[in-house]
Length: 333
Image (cartoon, rainbow, N blue to C red; front, top):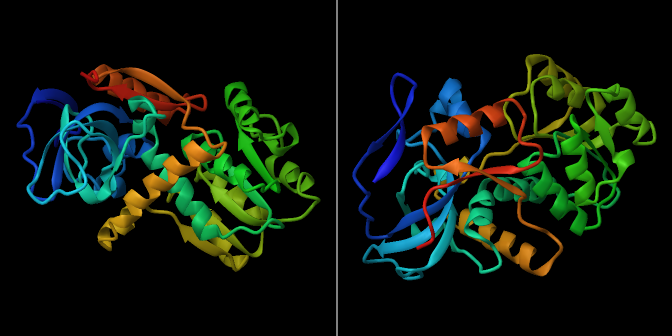
């Protein structure tokens, strides 16, 4: 099969490698579409993220069609359309034509989702759900969200709004991102343009001059420092990026803040495989029975080095414009 390989020289190239053989509890899936995530390019650049790379094939989420099954597989059969977040299981490899994954982390793709939409859902959806479940928000809580127009932020806000929470402020930095937030139902006075506004003063002004109960940080670095300044005493800082600065950590410590580190990877270390399948099924239920919609996607291209480099560049430079990037690996036939 064809796969895009990240080699020891930290270069990408495409080559033919052996198609995996499913183990007794695994499915072999022909990948139709693969989702892109910031961790993909971070694995190429950041030594901490590289530790999570368990194969030379990048990519952590996909949709596709089951082609064969291991002898102990009970819930799937060849021909089933499925989707999955594979990277957190130490099973990277969605920049490829096939992948073998445990059935315990796979969900059936509903007819209501295209293969491309399904491939875009696992990482952002599971992360957004984990944030919400751990925050245990009450209607009177206030939330400051950095970078809400990205994939995780958009999914979080969609679910957040279906629960009728309204006390939040979100940052965005370009007209497309602002437009995408407005399209989700965010009000204009809840959006701070970080290129034009004094973020800290605007954050307080739009929250009745009060600090926030929760900060959901989807950006890190400089934004983590701003988060540390707008959070209330004993508030909760929800870190999705692991890019908070030493200055931010000092602010948060001095505020006595609770810190929630969000990681889908940790559940695989605990062998809590139900987390993945249950989360995917919960997302499907929300999409099919509430106003939550799947990610807005942009298909970058086919299985090629050029597609990967363009997608990584757009994510690195914050040019996704509120869309989840997807690679079309193969056709559905």
